[in-house]
Length: 345
Image 1 (tube, rainbow, N blue to C red):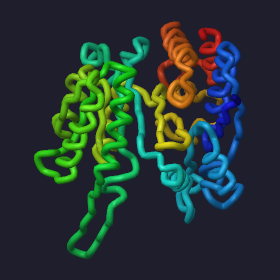
Image 2: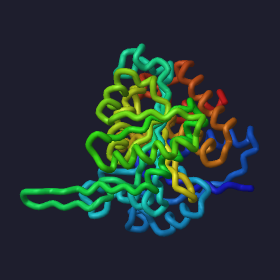
Image 3: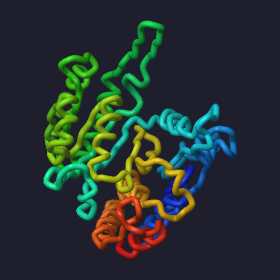
């Protein structure tokens, strides 16, 4: 059965890296007989340009009926003082598709170890995933601002916690079978509920080990001993901070993909970096984050494990050959990097 993939190239370097990701997808699909079709739609600044909104109605409807969504990048200085900004489209699509689980893999490539701010021995063997609850918590609670006082309400239901926990435990079953649940249970009521639900869900996954970590000590461990983590699961605010902290470990955002999952609808896959308008159109953008987002899509939306591994191994081999774009110390163009990865599939 043909799978439908909606592509949102967006702004800046978005169209360039999307083209690279789709080239790699086409090459893998031919080798593995993966049957798919793509539907390109405007999003972000591109959506504002054609429809006056970063998430045009036509784009949203296509996304809702897709089997998966690929997003490249959004944002442009052109809209800095505009009444509607491209980033509003991202918040809108997360809400409309109920993308409650944000998944960020953190893996160190041998060829790029020297770029990490940590000593080589600290990052040896680092390969973990941050699972962030994306639609609940303090960001979505009531916000009250007065002249001399302010209040932000942090709300979580057991059901919201339960579904993100199931996502984390299922992911751990495919990896190292260990979940680290991060909270602030010694202070916060929401964290006490978080820990109770984590313990409850853990009983359904006897093959997975659960450990608890307070968020402040977890932040330290992520720098001093990041290799001890396998799957890290946490609430929205803590996840926002820790996923950004973890993103510096590989030394570049240019190799980091991500996924956002709903309960029953399509998932969205995207690089974690921005649209880099300063280098747009020059053919020098690093396409690896986008290409690895394609690999995540193949694995997590379509069960195409072989195709995903082919891409990941090809990226690793290409980097080990010293083929590097400018952001990671080389001179390879976007097109030549893409071609090298395809030749290494």
